[in-house]
Image (cartoon, rainbow, N blue to C red; front, side):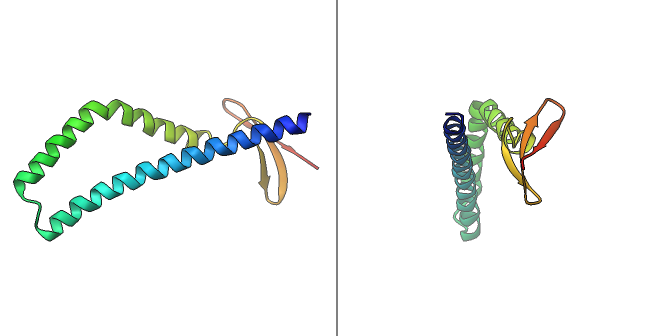
Length: 114
């Protein structure tokens, strides 16, 4: 029963991590697409000063409306992928040895599995 519960928990964790990476990929793709369109318009000469002022004013509006949300998303990305990549009880392979991580606030204990 314990193995079944651990496998179920692992499946949920992997699905959550995959969903987070997919959403991050979608967000980055949207940002790159918008920047590419703006650069393409600049190179083709279709982007005049008036259009550039209009785009920058709309960007200022978007930053004002969604600035706090963007800050929160950025902090969550840093927390999940940089500060807290592992969770308590995660099984990892370090130098070919399978280990279980016990993470505390300021330390990580590695338990070797034979």
